[in-house]
Image 1 (cartoon, one colour):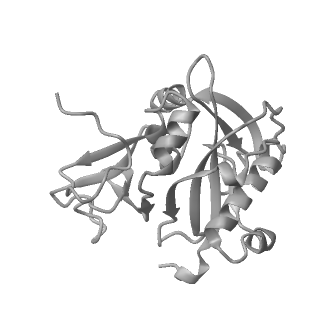
Image 2: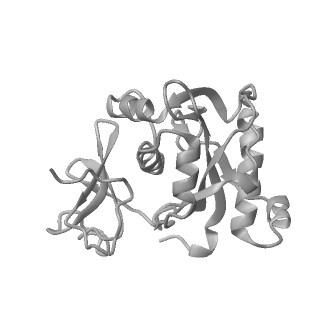
Image 3: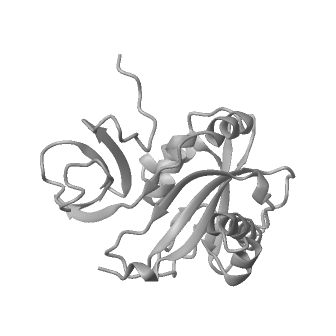
Length: 240
């Protein structure tokens, strides 16, 4: 297990705009040579630095907003305003990982149609995509994303406009997620609180299923027989 003191604060921002094709977000493709998530599509973001913490006057959540805005500018030339950001969730890297992050995930509108300028180092490509299209491409095996990205896109894909999303998410509960990653049946599963195997790291245990399963490079979210006090991370379809 990693020492929890090594967890570094970080933040990510889902940049949003309205379009004729629906609600769109900006995804960035990481350099394939990077050790972590090389070649994956991500939202802009990164670790908090000393200047961010100073701007937040020691408050990590405030500093995370500053860092998210800074990273968006550095990685893709966009200028979200920290005060416009809506906190969506907070994810902590699994305890078994050597590099761990405590990541605040925000959504933010873009007021101006700024030209996307990627840094060419850490980021090698970009795409503005309707949220539903991004998910469809992922499920077709064409867009490599990590579980937090899949969960976030799925959560936000129920909205049709930026205004609708910001209004609803402003007062929504903020889930705090500490996944447990393990192998299972020749693949990888990400277990979440409420899964029968979460505490013992045994995905084979019978009972509740609250997990994401990697299938042919695509993540599939499962929420079955989970206690009522544990809300799904992804909106569930109503029973017929």
